[in-house]
Image (cartoon, rainbow, N blue to C red):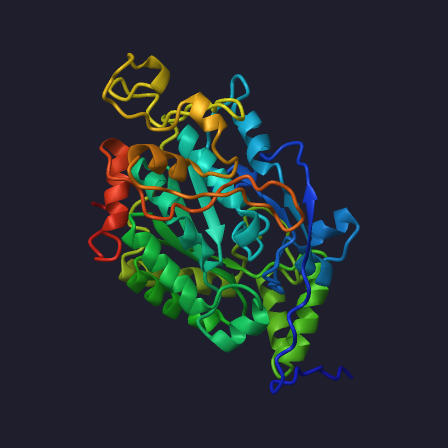
Length: 430
């Protein structure tokens, strides 16, 4: 007989203490040949995830570090402190061919520690510098912090953001995804990104039988109302240790239906709790998988989601300069020559500071802030170095404090998009 351990709803349990260890990554790009995944290159700036989602398929990866896939995965995190420099080196290798890089395929790149480490923002700055296409998957509203970079990338058809929404029930979300953004905040992030001209999709993931499966249509409806243009879904996966963790959670929070849930999972997985096979592991098989597929197809058709496929532009890519060099945002355009190419006394304004002045600037200043300090010299901007919680130099600087400068060209159009954000004047198709 199993006696479920029901949490005391009268007392909120204290948040577990999180520790972060800095790591020097040898490389950042990871490649896969799975037919189930719509990308073949990924970047993950963190190991472990503070969100603590009980169903997370990435939990077993912590075992390779000698830590547990349970509490250690949520609290003993690793930050790849040199993520931006390592990725810059890989993008600059001779013969590199760009393909959309996914950020957050394993652990969420916008988990709470990103507020301090800012590695994801640094990667986006590199994507903008090199005009490299990128996709993002997250369940944290923190993604809206980087609207300046995302809007500039979207202006050049270089980004799409997918936000995972598992449930709209705040109570369920607190137990299922205890430290992820609340469902309403994720919908607000969808709205903010869409209003800024950033293509946004929503992932109903994972679908858990008898837990959140009845919410699929509601999630899609609210996501469409918030401005989403794309949607997808996956069925719960229980690889390795995740199976035991999820069963414990199920018995603790839903003892009345635990066995029904597990049996339905087995119906979706050919009689097993987990199916690792390509082609079936994401959506399941059998009559119940077919029913979910039909419901999703009908709902997206009625709502007008997935009406066209977004193809990101891989032809704009420019190899990055070496670390510490001064990039030019307009190096590809004849009318926007780099500072070194302009004649002395030219009235044109350099998109970025010259190498000499850049050497005196703080190492943590972002590309956007660097651009602002040149294009608007009469406005004083203050920046400072940012130190990570463990003392390592962060790879990105502070967000642009006063919005993007009013300039012409592609970057200027991105700036005008941001200024129209509050007025709600933007559309994906403008």
